Length: 224
Image 1 (cartoon, helix red, strand yellow):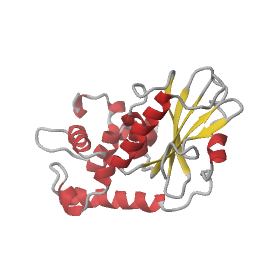
Image 2 (spheres, rainbow, N blue to C red):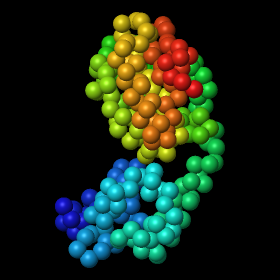
Image 3 (cartoon, rainbow, N blue to C red):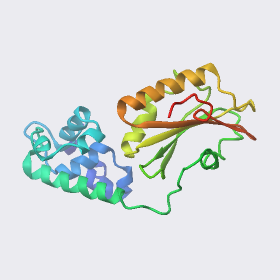
Image 4 (cartoon, one colour):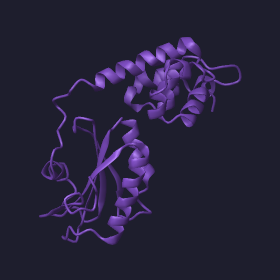
């Protein structure tokens, strides 16, 4: 649906005002910054095509000339985008003392109290910044954990969106034994390799039970 055909309360600026900026999709946020589209394409279409071609992390790393060359942006809009990017990067460099610091397996386990007693397996990811501060925790899947259920895109999409430098994987074993299954090991290996390709380190994988925990890194199942 074109921007002009959307109800007024669903258009990006109005949606931001009514629902809050956190409820906008990436293309809607970019559309607000771009302000206008190009002949034959409204601004939402332009924003969507840009983010399809450039993943958010790659887009944020482009320089002035590279952004200016993208159809639908141009030099004036590129300078606005670069200024917004730089403010974001500088803000992320300001240490937020309210964010928990993850320095040990114990610190990770403290963040997993909500899944230790669950009857189903919960697979979660803890996303860290470069100072090992926890910036986001997300439940990736609920149910039997295997490589088919936990796909790399489900783990690394929020990592990219949160500009995380590392991720700690974790899940619970309702059986009471923290020993990793062959499927746990296979799935972790796939995610570690995907992280290497994307430049986001898989720091550890922690399995928790009601009374126990196990670190893949401490057991030598993750190198580093």
